[in-house]
Length: 411
Image 1 (cartoon, rainbow, N blue to C red):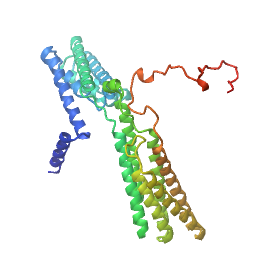
Image 2: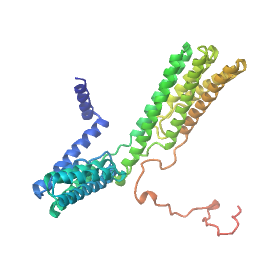
Image 3: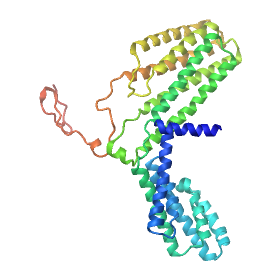
Image 4: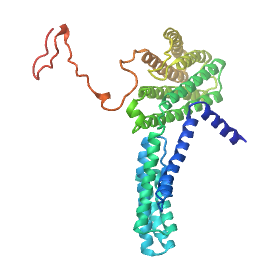
C-alpha cells in the first residue's frame, strides 16, 4: 500500500506542478514514442527483416540530456557492431550455436567492459546472443541489423533533442537552497543545545549531522555537472540561450562554511569526551549566541548573486555585531582556562571566527551591484562578438594604441 500511495502521489505531482516527477514522466513518454516511431518506420513501412533492433536502440537513447543521448548513441552502436561481428564470425567458423557462444561471449564480455563503451558494454554480449539465437550471420543479415540499429539510434537522439529537449537549470539553485536550510537548522540546534547545557550524545548528533552535509555537497557538485551538461548540444539553449547559473564561487563558499561547522562540532565532541563539563557554562552561553547569530545569517544568505530577495543589510549588520561581541567574550575566556580549556576554547574561537568571516564575505558579495548585461546567457557567434566601436580617451580625443617601445602619453 505504501508503494501505491507513493506512486499516486508522484502521478499527482507530475500532473499539477513542474519538477522531477514531471521530467521523468515526459522522458518516459518520449522513450515510448521514439520506440513506436522506430518500429513504424522499420517494421511497418520498410518491413525490414531486423526491425526489432530499431525500437530497442531508440528507447535506450532518450536520456536525461541531449549530450548524453549523442554520446550514448555512439557507445551503443559500437557495442552492437562488436557483438554482431563477433557472433557472425564465431558462427561462421564453428557452425554450431553452442560452440559459437563459447567463443563469442567471452570476447564480447571482456571487450564490452572497456570504458569506451560506457554502460552499453553489455549490449555487445546481448547482441551476440540475439545473432546466434536467430541463426542469422550472412552478410545481408549483418547489414540489416546494423542499419536498423543506426536508424533507431538516430530516431532516439532526434526525439530527445527536438521534442521537449530536457533542460534542467534549477538543480544547482535547489541544491544550494537545501544546503543553506540544513546548515541553518544545524546551527540553530547548536545554539539551543549549548544554551541549555549539552551532553556528549548531543555533540555526537551534531557532528554526525555536520558530516551528512558532505553528501549534500556531493549532490551539489553532481547538479552543477548535470546542469552544465544539459546545455551542451541542446537546440533550445543554442537558439534562445539560458538563464545564468549561480556562480561556482557559491559552491566553494558552502564547502568552506560546512567545513568550519564540522570543525566546531568535532571540537565539541572531543571536549565532551574528555570532560562532560567542557566547555564551561559561560563559554557555552557565548558560543550559543554566536551560533544563533550564525544561523540567522545563514537563513538570510542568498544562494547566488542573482537572488531576487537580497538580505536586509541593516538587520544583518546588527546580528553580525552581536555575533562578533559574543565572539570577543568567548575569546576572552581563554585567560581563565587551564591548559586543556585553552585548547578547547581556542579552537572554538578560531573556527567560529572563520565561520563568521565566511558568512560576512558572502553577505557582502550578495550586496555588490551586478555587472551590466547580467541576464540570459546566449550561445553562438553573437554572444562573443566584440564591441568594435572606437574608444575615446580623456578630453574627447580618439584613443590610439601606443606603438611598441614608445612611452605612454602624459595628460
